[in-house]
Image: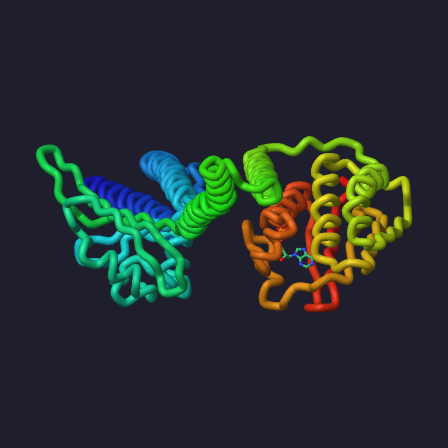
Length: 428
Ligand code: ADP
């Protein structure tokens, strides 16, 4: 009886141990299986495969753990997206700044640089330049020399420098401060580089223009006041001399008027923000100008012939501008062509544009002056131009107008043989 009881007890203990072992084994297998999944999934996540998830079918703590793990992946994914997005935004802002931006730490190592600065500093060949010393990375030595003394300076500095290729830059160097609760420490400098070559050129052009205008106006005014003074002081001058002086005053006054008219016209064209486009019959405008200028040609016995392949050329352009172009080019041809010669005018109609060309048998333009005749006040022969009533502004005005209506102007010329001005104007 006692033996039986002992046997039952032993059997029960063995059975319970076996059951516990089986349960533990199963649990261990499940945990291992999950661990394996954890390892695989965490590896995928480290490769940024955030779409992956653990299955949450497991019961108890494992199920809870899987759920938390999945939530963690989601949070991590959205945080990384946010960080990436804000990084992208900052990078895009930096890239779209039209001037160069460079930030360096107090040891002159690059913290940040935009593409524009890379180009200006001739270091665009580096894909990853952050962390490099500016001494090694920047190949534009003139700018580097200008920046170096002010790196980590506590004060803002503005410098204007001219490169060997004549480009002009302004460089602003400002300190970067790290603000703590109580104080602020300097951690580097931010450098802002701007190419101001165009602006400087425009300023120079403007001041040259003002100087030229003053000079051009001064000449006739001096002449007029000189002759008026002479007339006033010499009341008993003979009639012939008196009339000669008066006609000089008259011609200088006319010159002054022409100059002022051209200067005003040029400034009007330059300041006009928009051009009025209207339907223009090119033939009509041409005939008007031809009639206006024919007396000039007749005075010199110059024969002006014209050839128009279509009398109904219609354009959406500006009538006044077209008229001004025709006047300037035809008048020049007459002015710079000797007596008894010929001038040939052609207007050719094409699909999208028309070409207006004027060929003369005039004095021609030397090769070295061809590029410059469109500059304000540029004249090949100043005295000759003045003598025949030129202001030196006609071609500058013409070029400006042609550009404003979307066209182009070209000149071919041979000294002593003649010149041809070819203007292409779009019809729309
Ligand atoms: P200008 O009032 O002196 O004629 P423009 O600006 O019209 O000024 O022309 C500039 C210069 O270009 C002239 O002074 C002249 O030297 C030269 N030029 C212009 N047109 C002709 C031409 N048809 N033949 C020869 N030279 C010309």
